[in-house]
Length: 428
Image (tube, rainbow, N blue to C red):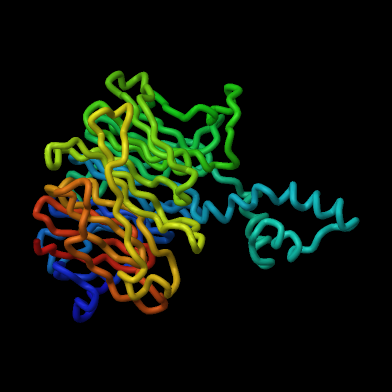
């Protein structure tokens, strides 16, 4: 890890860069008690912990590697003296294609009257010819390591593993936690796509499953039949506010879940806008405090497979007065004209917002649009009051701002998917 040179303000409004860490990219940054916890996208890096008590002089104090090269640990959350890191199959989308190898090989052989060549198989499953061998090896190897690891961070410079819980399928994606419970989004045997599994952390050395929640159609082992292909309807992650979980469920939209009885999660309501909106629901979250006298929730979609002529992923502002019947108040969109890198390559569009309320402000990562600061003072008319677009790093044509957090001091941490962590100050 090295600190970068002069900090760029070429594409900035009301945001001052304090420091930049030239580090491999990540999936999530969480900041608590003067330390930033970064989950990296790819092995051999797993979780890095930085002392950011002086935000202008961040200092690496600990690094945790995945146990092998077949998993990544790109998500991390902290509550009190506990940290949880996910364990998920690395290159999961690639290996999903391997699940069709046997079927495609048989179909091609029947049609061709001979064993198909790797190039023909590759074209049918959507990979390159030289990748077919890797797919076969991955299918032969299988994957049994998905789950999550629980750590003591009483001393952040010396994290100590307390438990490793294996779940199922490709493992755990994004999740939420507090000092008592972990709200895990994971695949499980007998279900199609990620579901919510809640674990009791009363004894963090032995997390205990207390309940599950899934959408109708996911529990195939119980005879349910999904009405969608593949894993299009799945839990991305659910965030707890009070006794309600606010769940982003990909192409199934957003769900609210009552967990007042933690052993019996119960669906309250849902809001699905697919179709016509083409991008999947990433995060759904109710703000902790009212804004302009209104109970608000936010939904943000993830720019995933954008098609020209369709809207880019954007932010929704929702009326959350009745959690069983949330309704849209307004939306916030970003034009490609607002970033010099929008057409350079990579993704452009929304991805994630910070989950710590700062008055009426929303800090959102927008892939090649960088970080946008959106004011909800008038919820009907959200307006941008600041932005910061990092310069691309060597080997990349555009930034891919992936995740953002804001610490209690108001310092902003912007993590790039490919490379770099920017530490910023917003000047209102």
